[in-house]
Length: 229
Image (cartoon, rainbow, N blue to C red; front, side):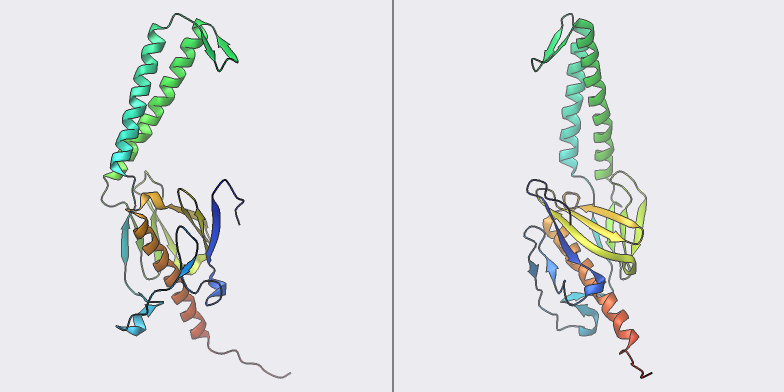
């Protein structure tokens, strides 16, 4: 359980060891309340909690092109402005009435801000590039979930559903899903999905897939046999 940070909190979604007890349904991505889906009457053996299993679902997962472009343009303007100030500066600078710099220190400060802005421009350009990649997706397969290794990388990480130990959702302005598995913890941000409905659909399907997998595993083990000694 993560500590409270302003309005953010972390909600436990599903633990494979508590199938049927702590996570009977999907969790709403904003309120944390469990929701129920109507069970499908078609192909009943291929559904779990109203969601069809044994199918692969793909969700685009990339930065928003417009926001990435606007942020890149903003930091480019900042870099140009601060560079211009550094080239033409001949006076000192007082920061918040506490830090006083002479003309040389002020010029160095302007160059520093210009360089930091250029670094953010480079990151913004990489984000714009990532937003245009058609193959940047989160894929939920019958036995695994395939996730981009990072927001700017083409590489992917495959997490077998059987390796997932727990799911938790950090709510707030920017919801963040934590997938706890045997290899560590992988995070997925709602803001990189197309919209919150697609994020909610992915979350519901992932929970149902984990529950179905563990229910099938428990069923295959059969009833426990007790022997007198």
